[in-house]
Image (cartoon, rainbow, N blue to C red; front, side, top):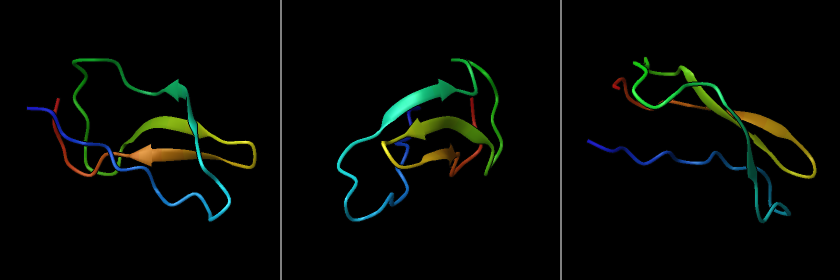
Length: 55
């Protein structure tokens, strides 16, 4: 079952972000709040965490 990954608020002036680095691979087990990827903008780099556990 696929789960949407919600991008955290990055600021009012930020209109796009790029996945800079995936921290897990397809098929890996993840826990709640485990970092999934790093998003990069022209101003900031943030980690996106899993909202639910799964594979």
